[in-house]
Length: 317
Image (cartoon, rainbow, N blue to C red; front, top):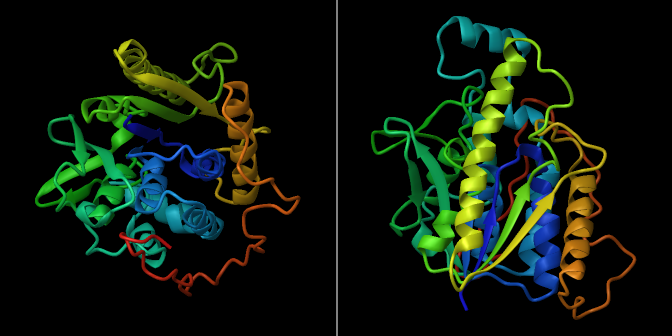
């Protein structure tokens, strides 16, 4: 059996995936292949480096340190200036690039260095519009792949690698199941950050912006459904489709509630796995929350976030 975990994008909701992965690892659901798209690529890099509980705790600490200012820096006036001056995006992505390095992803780390599981990260090749998979070439740099996969236009500019420009992998498909299928997966756990019934608007769509959002949502939904059909009809493949969504809902641009999202991701995944007949965790759960009880301390705007020690791709945390 060659087990794969496929992680979708979802902005700040990516914290839920870390909680969900914790629940899976407690039940000995450990992947041989990890595929990530957009923010799911960041979580995929943690999981593939070391698919164990210490790494999930480390990923939780990283999510606890993410702030909206690191992902979407600048004032409203700065955003307007970037728009009027013809910049490639509304926000600069250099702050996020620095944050990833502070969190342990060094520019020198390649996919060949990742030893816990096979890692694949998707992005969209801007010139051709085709899906690009980082990781087939083991010399690909993980940090470049993460920046390319999370370059959500028009918020962030395309990321350039060797003269080619890439944008968010979700532009082609928000749940890249085809990548796992093409690389020999015989069992797939797909973790999709998706609101139940989100394809149905609450009422009549009004306004230009609302119509654009609805059109884009429909396109992405159809792309995801295409990959879901591929996985569901693939021969000799066990497929588990698992959706997560916070209650009450928050915006994917709100990075201020990581602990609630970590907890809900864990609880929702534990319930989904129990309903599917997966065995309970080997060790009984304690009453203490599994993620670090860290108080959110927002650093001054001109200070650096304390760095985690660099990842050792061969051994994890």
